[in-house]
Length: 231
Image 1 (tube, rainbow, N blue to C red):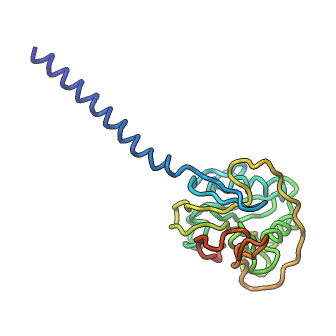
Image 2: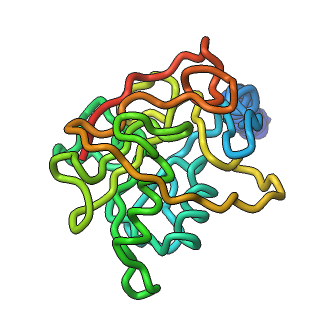
Image 3: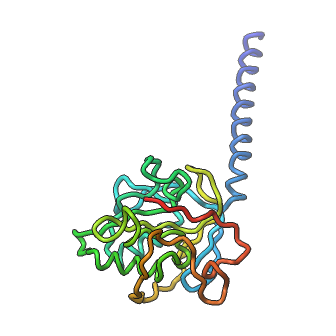
């Protein structure tokens, strides 16, 4: 009788542990539910996404990762400009610790020769992101190209995306992209080749357009991390 009661007690304790584990899992999952990704289209080629950040492999670029909210923009650049990404999310000390590589919101780009890529196409992408030196358009935060030490034709193009302040190795709460992470059902507009003025520092001030404000469609009261020169 005593042995039977002991076995029942052990079984009851075991079920209690299981139930507590399930309850703990439900509690742990609740913040994720509260932080579900929300995207809002602000302009024809500008999207604001809150939450949902995660460092994921970049399709077609083995060994490279990025914040998953950038995947649609990367897919567009890959198909339109035949790019090859040499670095995305990275903690390599060659990159600025307060820049976008350590938070998965920057890409280093060269031509994908195997797909017909060349520096002329990469230049077109650079001009699209930054029509004038030091004045990238949203959603790009900093553009490293011709005129910036360690960047440019024959070296690489650096693109960073706008975002809310965050710490290295932590996805930003808010990210601005050209396309929303969810399909929006519209094809990218044709780009225009525009000349860049000479300058030593690369793009650091997003230019206004579309009548929205100084950050090119991003509300003027948006909390944005400062632009950082990177490699």
